[in-house]
Image 1 (cartoon, rainbow, N blue to C red):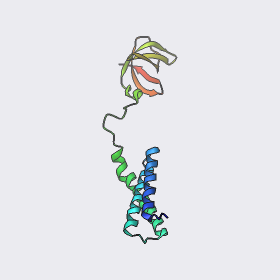
Image 2 (tube, rainbow, N blue to C red; image 1 turned 60 degrees about the horizontal axis):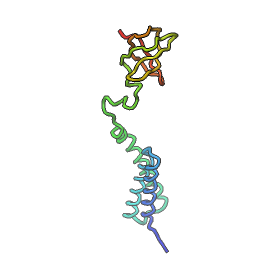
Image 3 (cartoon, rainbow, N blue to C red; image 1 turned 45 degrees about the horizontal axis):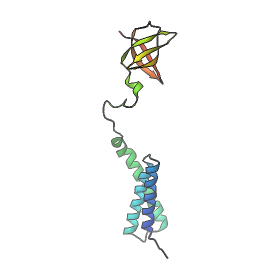
Image 4 (cartoon, rainbow, N blue to C red; image 1 turned 90 degrees about the vertical axis):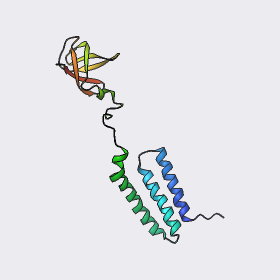
Length: 148
């Protein structure tokens, strides 16, 4: 019937692990899949390698691949462009901005006009129309103080 060489089994395992990485991304199975592919190459070159030696070598290759990613490649792959730290975090982009109160801050709560919308604000009691500066963001509430 069908007889698969051991290196083909390692390559099939590599494809399954890399496919798992595509379905559940996280950079973890990718590196173990690359180690499995390397094991396929090793067994293609040295087909007489025993099962225990294969298991130990695979564990070493998988550990080395994961450490290589963690120590050397992760910082390069996840590098952020300067100034984009707050991209897609609209509330944090408002820190330091100034807005006008459309409801006075009474008992620490009020509303400010932000663009064409309204945001809840918290801070010291201030009258309607006061310009405030955003100090921080807590969920959907802007923490403000009177602008100087």
